[in-house]
Image (cartoon, rainbow, N blue to C red; front, side):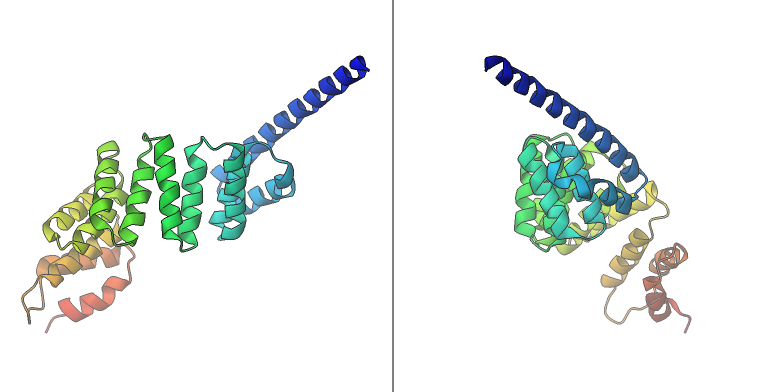
Length: 242
């Protein structure tokens, strides 16, 4: 009887090992598809296996594909499953936080971003996203602390400075907002939204009745030339010759 029990133990161990190897192979294939942004293919590959997947990375990738396809409920179920399999990987909390954000649940998103940062403080995107979340909640001073931290870790990501500029604008710190937006155009000369916002800042500070400002018009023209149609109406209103 003991021999039989030992045989079944060895057999079940063999099956588990085989399952893990298969999951790893599937995860590797899914990663290739994600790199090609072929989200439908990721779902087609992983969704039929979801219930039996024991590889948390594979489940997380399925969730990410669902989120990119705006199937947020399915994404959330995957991230919950990934966290149940492994609650020590910041990526799963970070992705679930983004799913909560997509679902319009900022407080829950914030909890997951906090948890992600408890697990790893070396990823600047975590500070950037938490800052953006705080800014969306109107908590701009807290958001600035996160944007500052992200900027100290990666001074070349235009999104950090653009988001920080929005918080400075909300706090009416126009000079600091302008400085960040100008830096955006320095590191990303094709960033149309930064030029557009620079034009808006100038016009927001002009004296009552003032209309045309050459520098503002220059920024708006640049934004339009870079493919931002919103600049056209403002150009016509503010910059058209009398």
